[in-house]
Length: 375
Image (tube, rainbow, N blue to C red; front, top):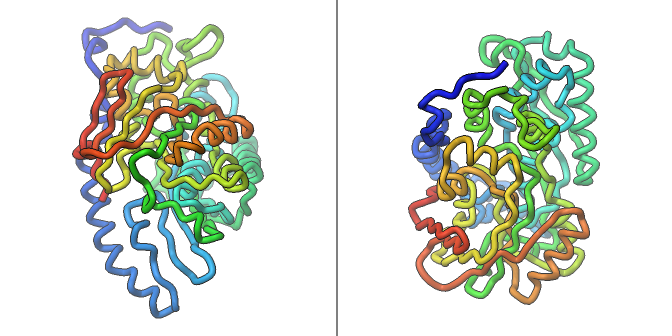
């Protein structure tokens, strides 16, 4: 069934229109970080200490003596709603790929600090016990979760499967994962203390939208003539494209370690889009000379949401799911290491001395110091 186009379809659809406003969310994150920082002193009673520079980074790091421990917890977000609707439309369960998305949210954050992922824990909170009664869906979730763990060579330690009627909507599930990792030798720690002018910026390709920006992507369905079954490419629907699983980047960072390449800093390009390249607090200019090819689903979203490049690159990964800041002399080798792991990569730019800003030259876009406030 087709849907008529309304005048409102000509308006730009932003993340705020989809109900996500980082201007409201980020201040809470900052307040929580400041309160949490005051608790770091408790580690001294156990003979340990926190790595202060990890506060505000994607993972928290503790110095336990011979090595560092890193930890993170992340949730999937609303991508499961797309899987549920596509199941209704196609009869296919997509929870094997949804499982990988959930693990990727945690592991791709953990590895930014130089950690090797060791243990993953699962949190699967359903709106009622009936959710677990669908054996096909439940087994797809289990199988996908194990496969992602095998890809990352991480142990699945256990988890929690609460039925939360009245908290989680009936027929829905909220998926999350926590991950603990080891930084050993300690020289692998990557919190940006060596980041500086002259470093190269290597971008690792994404597989599509990953699991960020789904609130906007779901809102966009209201504008599409056939909803999730609208074709992005011949024979390939919007819903299928959205459900491409997030790339797991830990095989790349582990391969970089074995190749003798130690990133000075890393950024997982998730919420806030390319503004995440500004995550480190130091004042540097990040100059992008080359941008990766944009996945068809993200170009489709940008066009139908009537977004200019600035809006799109501040919301979505636009083809770059992870950034490595490495010595210029090691940049091309880093690309080759990533490609050997099946992940496309390119040397996109470099770090310069100057005011804190991101300059994407091919698109004429600039984000200043005020574009990302996470600490």
